[in-house]
Image 1 (cartoon, rainbow, N blue to C red):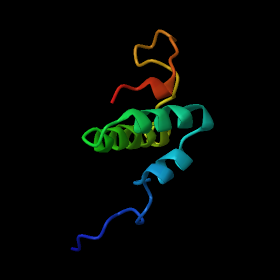
Image 2: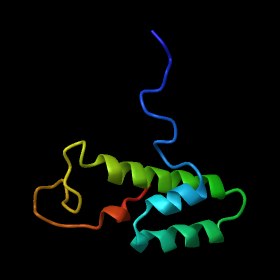
Image 3: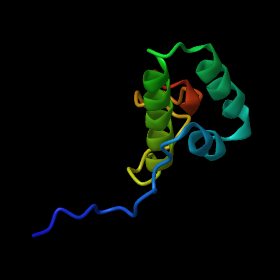
Image 4: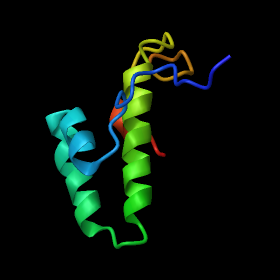
Length: 85
């Protein structure tokens, strides 16, 4: 048994530029605004939060979720980018 990763290296964006490039244009400016307003203690948290948002958004279809629909089954819709991380 080996400890090799199951995903290719670099499959998930890690740097500010990679995250910005992976975001849709409608969210890219919000990301850069968060990065620009964060101090040195908050930068890592901002990067982590946006990486998690990307992972949730990108993996939702694999998990069988339909983005934009609530889990309550009431048919309510919401913005998938409003996930609070």
